[in-house]
Length: 433
Image (cartoon, rainbow, N blue to C red; front, top):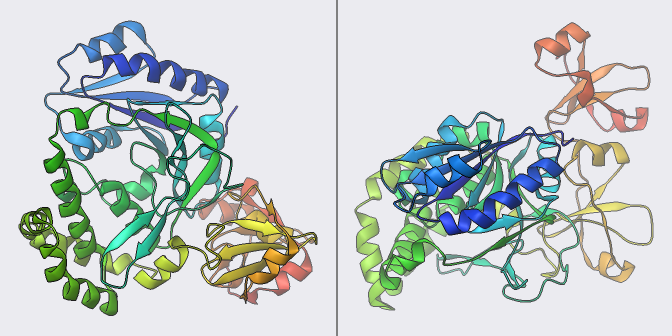
């Protein structure tokens, strides 16, 4: 039985025909993982009998019927508000999943730093729709995204878990408490576009991680719902408007902000749609400023520090967040400008969401510049050979006096990682926890 349980929220609008394919795959994957997950369909004011179809044919599936179509932002937020599990998996009705989907996707949440996990998403014909994503910054102040392998056959190019720019809202898992701390999906992005980019980027700035898991596989029939009913020009206008709102409400680095505002008048002249979207975005400037002001006290990383993690790795070949090793026994974490040595198995175990180390050639490994070594994960529990327990905080080890004290801290013995004296010597002494 899978260790982690989730509320699986499926967003639906006039998609009874899609639910006939989506729900059986979800139920099969729930059973494969040992059951215990909650399945919740959010019906966005459908008129095709979707809600009754689910209630009549899937008695174990809950339905929240909404009186009107609230779009992606409003629909998912309604489901998140009543979800009962610590984790949530958001799915569009146009997706279906492999049997081991939840088993592979949810293991990453053993690491409390993980905010969200994105699966491999394929087209119905098996082409890559979403693999890992990295952000781009063109120096003129416009953010973009790079999808290596997009629309190509799935050849397993990404061999293991890694960082990703964002977790797509239509097929990803999230820590519900962290979503709540961020205020769910922000209504400034209603009805859709950039809401999942925004929530993931804000998580990165808080020091949380968004992971890509290639062993969790889903399929998606793109364009089967909203795009059939939203004119193409309006769809593009919303996309451009919301990208501007993303930049205005999240960027704080002075140089990046200056680049953006310097280039914006030029950008607006390149396409009439740019000018229209700029005008539409300006109507939300007050909300964007307030959103940034509210978030700022919680930031742990600067924009440039985030881009160092979610941009392309120095090689441009392997993603940031990949664990790799050559023919020797040493393991390295790829981040930004190079490789970081993982000094012991105990350090690796403290980042328990990374379960797959990718073997690479020694020549490739040598090409990555050596960066500072990886430390124990913040907040992890360690036990010395004499069974003294410690909590790691800011590079120091803080002894835990007793099991009672451990319980008072909301922790359990199951979290403890046995370590050697050598591992402990890497940490400075700290006061009692």
